[in-house]
Amino acid sequence: MSTSTRYAVVGGGIVGLAVARELLHRIEGAHVTVFEKEDAVGRHQTGHNSGVVHAGLYYQPGSLKARLCRRGGHLLREYCSDKGIRYAECGKIVVARNGVEAARLSEIRRRADANGVPGLRMLDIDGIRDIEPHAQGLSGLHSPTTGIVDYPAVARALAVDVVDSGGTVLLNEEVRTISRRTHEVMLGTSRTTEAFDTVITCAGLQSDRVARLSGGEIDPRIVPFFGDYLLLDEAKSGLVNGLIYPVPDPRYPFLGVHLTKHIDGRVSLGPNAFLSLGRETYDRGRWSATDIASAVGFPGFWRFASRNSAAAVREARTVMSKTAFVREAQKYVPAVRVDDVTWGPRGIRAQAMRTDGSLEDDFVIGGADRIIHLRNAPSPGATSSLAIAEYIVGTVVAERLGITAARMMHQQCRTTRP
Picture 1 (cartoon, rainbow, N blue to C red):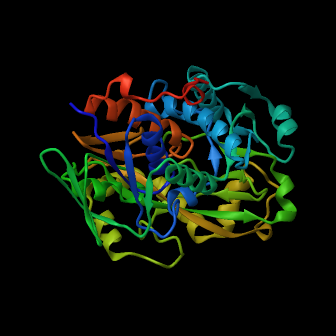
Picture 2 (picture 1 turned 90 degrees about the vertical axis):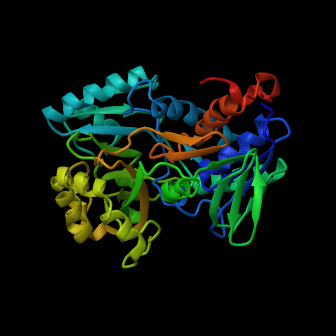
């Protein structure tokens, strides 16, 4: 099969832009066009997350998440250094508050070791306080290479790379139709219809809908969950040196409130997690009738909800009460007070869910032939973005289109393993 040369990437978030850049850098003769429906890149999940660069502690060894998180963190550090983008390895402590959580923490350590996370160290009470003097806990796991970064700046730099490499980034271009022809794919927007040899969609919060444009499977469906953040008063930012996380409870689908230092020095509490009234409604009080109907009309949501009522009650308290929100953070840093915080930004995660109510945990790449869909890229999706791009281009695209190694342009600085 001959090598495709005209590529469309749907979605101008960090992953879509990374894929576009990888196509231009790796496939000889590639012509790449990115379609982004907003007036700037990185407007959704890329620009509404905590900015954490994950080290790969939690993920099932051997999973795409585990492999691409480790590789992605390495590539991201190199990229930020090359581009002069702010990046810091502030470190993270996962804190166990009792014996049950301490046992779970041992399992996290086992997974992290299997994933090759460097520099890990178990901490006792005094060890926690040596790193985070205001934190409390029975034991902890310290990951010194967990970092923080300015993800919107990374997205903007990737967009510049795409254009500088001969690609095109189209803003205010919402993709509305995707249809196959014998040897090409037709992609339509409100302004035009163009033919491409291959279409790769990285549409985040709209990934299921974009996949359905080309006849993709219903599962997994995106159910949006918002996460609110509280911002700690700048005068109190010294209460936290890095990242302080709870031990995940396997009974609940979401992590719970944690404390995060950001690249600008501010400290946030959160996020919580609750069903969002819209996929892109970041302002409190806004809602989308279409998105509400999509979520509550999905049988998988009700099956999920019936199994997670306790988690819903816990999260609802933090949604309705700042005091309850702060109380969750005080389990780890008691010195935080309600008067020390103000409501901060809101993020919305694209939670991929199946009809049986189960959540997709790993990255999911689907589609057929010349249409490739990234159906699920949850955290650590931003951390893994450059590695996801490597995988999609170097494995999925190459295998589907029969691109031989001779047609791939290898760059030593970008293929060195961590």
